[in-house]
Structure formats: C-alpha cells, structure tokens
Image (cartoon, rainbow, N blue to C red):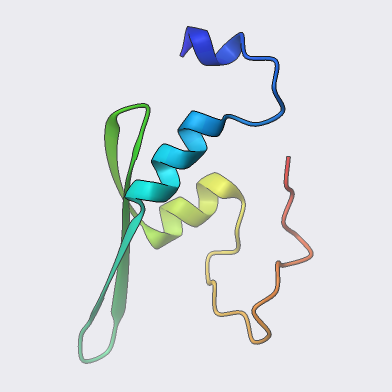
Length: 78
C-alpha cells in the first residue's frame, strides 16, 4: 500500500481498473429472501462481501432498492 499512498493523483487508476475488471455480483433467491454477494480483487487480494457490508464500506444505504436509480442524497463521495 505504500506505493499507493505516495501517488499524487486524485484517483488510483490501476486499482480502479483492477476492481472494475474483476467485479462480480451473485444474486441467490430463496422462498422468502434474496442474498447478494459481491466479489472482486483489489491490489491482487480477493474479497468476497455481502451486499450490506459492501454498502456500509462505501457509505451506501443498506438497501439499494432505489426507485429512480439515482445516487442517494446521503452518499458522501469522499
């Protein structure tokens, strides 16, 4: 992580490309529930998270059931 801390760009191009190119979402439905798991690589480390944990890390609402598919006003891009 040290090399990424020293980068002076506003974004992390390589990390972003790695994340987006490996992002996978799996939805499984049961009789009364639906589970969503998200997996991706970041800095060559594999991560697999539930949707609620993923949402809490990035500051998204626990439920992404947005009626108009817009970014929630509570979302902080920082």
